[in-house]
Amino acid sequence: MILPSHTDSRTASALSSPETVAGPAAAARMAQPEDGAAGPDSPTMVIRGTSITEDKQGDPSHPRTRVDYLTISCEEHVGAIGECISEVFSGAIAVPNLEQGPPLRHFTKSVRISVAGVPCGTIMWGGKSQRGRACVDLNGQGCAFVSDWKRAEQALLGLPEHSWSRGDIAADFFRGEVTNERVRRAHAEGKFMYGGRGPALRQIISSDGDDGETLYVGKRGGDKLGRFYEKGKKEFGEKKNRLMRRLADSPSGMTVTDSSINGGESFDLGSWYRAELELRAKNRPIPEDWISRRDEYFAGAYPFLQEILPEAEGRIIVRPRDMGIISIEGAFDNIRRQWGSALYTGLAYCGGDHLALFEKIIGVKHSRRLIEAGALLAIADDQL
Image (cartoon, rainbow, N blue to C red; front, side):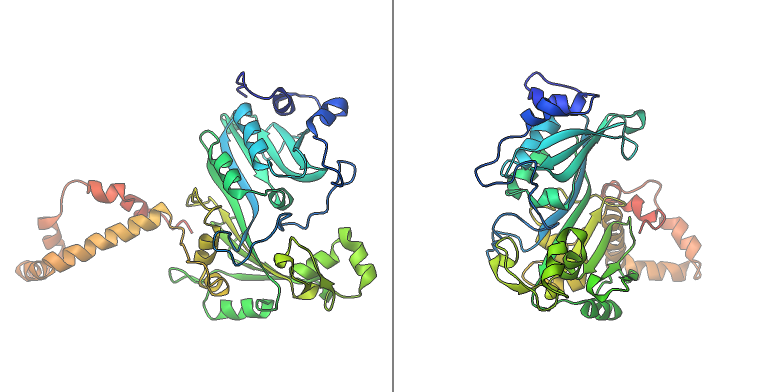
């Protein structure tokens, strides 16, 4: 990786050293937490996808949804990546710690990112097949530590030659207004359809009713996937929350009060429901501004998501091929309006021979305007 002279030597060492980071070197990279904050030996408990900062729901300047996972690809540049990670976690309870990791996803090198001992993500780079590319991956716990998403987004978009690979957006509901039954009913009513094609619905049901049920709408690994599950039951059933099961036999009827969840209002654990949208750059790029406008992209992904998040103005992600289809169909409409009658008369002149008429009027080169609009992509095989 390229190492500029201004790069923090501690960050550079963590990203480039072939040795496992340990002992004094690791301690030097971990800032001392404030009094009363958890240190590296006592990790802070973070429920995946929730925020450790105040949730200002109802304020139009603060999104209703949360960033729950992200992956961004960029040029292999240790200085830029190190500075980016520092900016992303600038408001966290501790300075991010970087520790050497194993080869991952066809990359030959990696470092693990953690905050106060909590695993937050991975940086990966190296390998001939990667052609000088690196990857930054932040999991749900890592996203929960981000206190200023505007600043984090600016830092991530400042990475050289960047492109989004994945972005997960989550919305939580606490009053029973969204349930598995409502999701199934919405799917049956066509509220997940766009472009005349309905995605498949898959269900994962546990034999233990307290473990909750998960529904998937769409294809895993496609451009978008809807994931819906009983978040409260999932938290109740996870091993890390054994204390919950000592306090109650079931999540239903168990009241939770947490300043970081539901705006600090108490809620019934069994009613906590989560809807997630997973975006991947499979056939269309993920918009640059998906973090700052996540409410809009969440609501615009499926009619049902707009229904459960009515306060957001839906924004549909359109791939280049879709724009090509729109452009060329628009050109056909213009031709029909302006020349349709003349062509109809011309068809009579040609004795009803469509091919003869076509040969008289067809051009010999492509329309530059339509090509630039992506019209040639519209003739490719279906990329859904």
